[in-house]
Image (tube, rainbow, N blue to C red):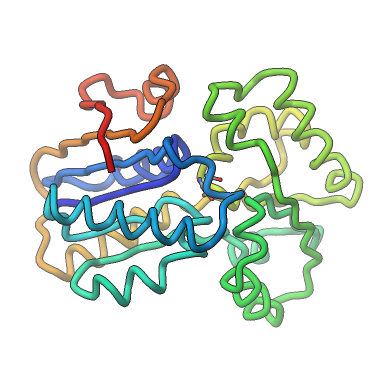
Length: 261
Ligand code: DGL
């Protein structure tokens, strides 16, 4: 089983890590599209083109059978197109975990952190409308402009990152928000900084584990036997912070190299 996973940069490694915890007997090819990061402030057309190019590369170079779009922004912009264009592939996207947040909150006040493109997308609006009937919950949406760049630089714990998050989160704290949806795969990497602001009791919702489970189900339906070694390759298209890769996936045996897509 060959699986392609991609994001604009380091964020999707939070999803890759969840997949590595459950998948065996497979080869994972991760693309960090850092030459074109961040996606969250680009047009839908630009993001769609990158998603298409990366998927074709993964298919032609590595013969992948499954594709994980480990990015909320790219999912919002391109998942429909990818499913239509590559119907023979297992295609799994990433969506903000609004439903688990609605089910978890005790105060009925939920914060959603995401990129501007994700929050503006039809997909997000549809998801929110669909879930509106489950329970009456107030959603506080915040587009975190500039946060992905801070994380890519490895600035997960710096004063500047703390202050950016503080400015967005303090109004939510004052409204009694007890659950926060991390609607961008980069944001689990600033979990500790978020907790310093919101307190340790805040519930943070991320979807890496759910994606990994979904992949297991779909691949086993296609006959994948989950046995044997798991190999992981990480490729990046621009520059990347190698220390951050080691910190996130904590596995020095992974091969990391630059590639042109
Ligand atoms: N990690 C991505 C997401 O989940 C995109 C971040 C970006 O490139 O703006 O939305």
